[in-house]
Length: 206
Image 1: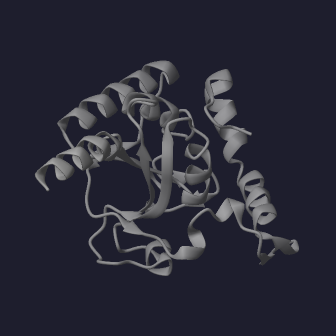
Image 2 (image 1 turned 30 degrees about the vertical axis):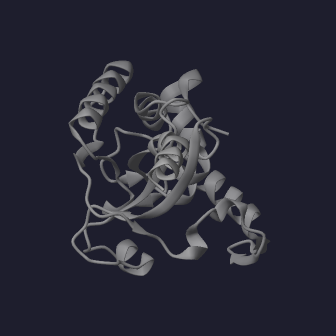
């Protein structure tokens, strides 16, 4: 029996260990999720809430304010294919890290940028990426780097929102969910601002 257990561990151990996690807040979590799911080596991106004081918060509670939570994403990745440093480089170039009041058209504390670090190594990498971003832009960086707290997965309808095929009601009438997402992203000015700020270095600007 022990022989079979050891064989199982040899087969499954590396695969289990080949996943690390990064947690970031970059404004609307629909957008951050859709961006990072395109990165080679990223296995999964989950939209959720973190950094606050309320257990199991709802979207309504978080966006109303007062919970302390950010809209955030949990990025699960294979460090043999993409490093944490790579993800931090892309993260800064996918947001406006100089904005302390939210992101693009989304204002308020829940839409601020932040990096939630899980250990001293992540903190050192995140701090270096922040310093590099500040040097590149020549402006103060508002993005906070804080210790990770409990990450609460957002409601099911928020997951992979940008891929949705259902019909939703928008200011321009009923639209397929993926089309509504594209309309929102464009109207919010996310990509326009990122390209204005970062130029050719913009990571995901459409």
